[in-house]
Image (tube, rainbow, N blue to C red):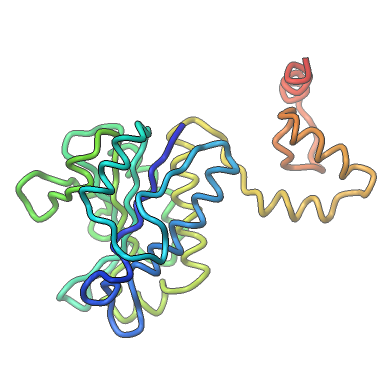
Length: 240
């Protein structure tokens, strides 16, 4: 399980960082990209960046080559949107024409994105079609299932105020991580909740908790919940 995270644009993209006023799209994209990498790796999924966050732009051709050479399973390009219409709004995901697996991933992202404090851009699901305005190079030229996320319209003053926040960035990253885990059939674990549970755990249980997680016997979640027979059997089998 290997995912490419493609942080859109660079600090030197013209106009500077491709933004408006004090907002720089590349910086937003970088902040969103860093967090799902951490979440996905904790859930056992390999992640590669096509370009490092908060750096100058890497060409589209180079980014696509990095992705294709990696032989990754998924490609996710992270962006914020812009329009000449200051009222344009909403969250949207593009997938390349006729790619059903990418369409399913995009659809899953839209479902998880319902937790965000904004609506959908149109119906939220957009097809990248050759020889049209939506013919995105990174979707057309990558050899794996690929999607491109437009998180919100930074040219809409209301959305910019609502979405250029740490809370929105955190939730957007979680949307990516949860959708990718679902795509791979991996149960998503929110490790911040686990860390909180560990703090509240009985002192005598903390060493045992660490041991079962490090040895792959349990994911360490829900420390105070009851255990089903299925879970007990699974843990015993993993010990064996």
